[in-house]
Image 1: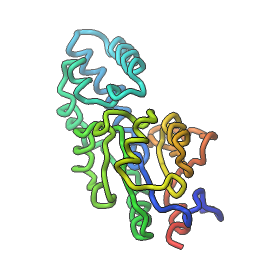
Image 2 (image 1 turned 90 degrees about the vertical axis):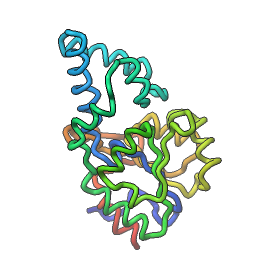
Image 3 (image 1 turned 120 degrees about the horizontal axis):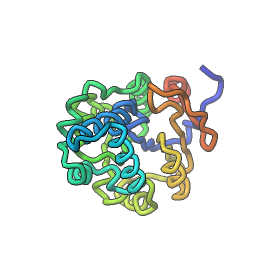
Image 4 (image 1 turned 30 degrees about the vertical axis):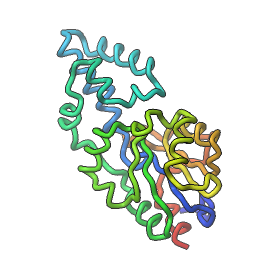
Length: 225
């Protein structure tokens, strides 16, 4: 616990939240795309897992930051794999961060509008909501696929602002992606917070470009003042 908040909560009316790596442990997604999918590609093509991993690294890099990167339909067509069935094989790895629910409930109880804005495909979002009941703690769940652009794009922030009534000066945006936080900053979102530890299996990242948080529960006493 520390003596000063990372966020001036008295100024915040709206909280926009990422999902994977921000509210949910990123380990599920990391393992799925970097381990399970290469294993399935290797079995399908009769190649080594290392070759399949190299292929996936190349393909992920090629579409990084675009809607395809996040689109399950794109990957299913490219790889010839049933992506949703594969996700369900390891759905037990879908876990909420331990500090998420107390944080969300404190935000709700303080009267703030709490909105999920994720680049996740609707299929993946639905599975995670089904397993975590995330929707019971958040006012609205938005997938950027509904707008046809990702959070990396200024077009997304423009479309979101037209759809959701928020004041950029009194809005907090929380994400684990530094490029996405830069996009939000460029659009004019005043208050930004980066997740220091999105993947529970990896060390803290040492983020310096934005205020960063390890445990949301440290902020709760300041939210509910």
